[in-house]
Length: 127
Image (cartoon, rainbow, N blue to C red):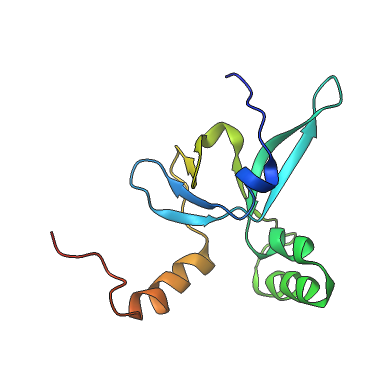
């Protein structure tokens, strides 16, 4: 696959991530995982999402609190941010689309079920 030069802040960070097949919203791009090529140029290897990715980017007390609370609530020994490999990204536009069967983050699922769905008009119109 041919590489494409993009501006990470403009084209990736804070964009919605959705599945390509059903356009189901999965998460937002909270941070990026980078690597260096043989010439020392950075390239994006993965999209990172969730409070463990966003907290360090926010910084300060709010960011540290976000990370600390998430680490307390997650059962893993060393929790990591939600990670989507760039090979799974099929399009970068108004939203970042992914091709494979990724599932929404638990926070996004909870928010959709308990907050968004209760807003009048938030449901899909009957067809």
